[in-house]
Image 1 (cartoon, one colour):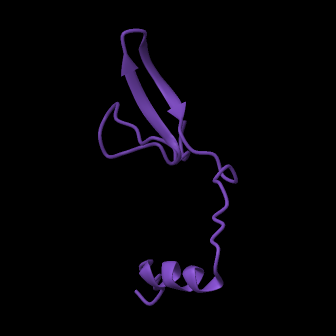
Image 2 (tube, one colour; image 1 turned 180 degrees about the horizontal axis):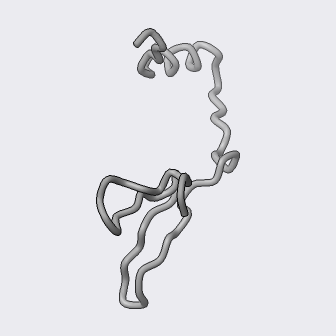
Length: 65
């Protein structure tokens, strides 16, 4: 399919769609979805200060590139 984002610069080599993996096992080759938006468990911490500490451990997201 043209323009679907799966094309690469190589013949017969395609990109996988986000949240999919290629599985090869004795039954053959198949695409398998491994992630669904909104299905992640919510994080519940006992103290509000813990949220702040966890957030400070995350990398900073920057948009100045």
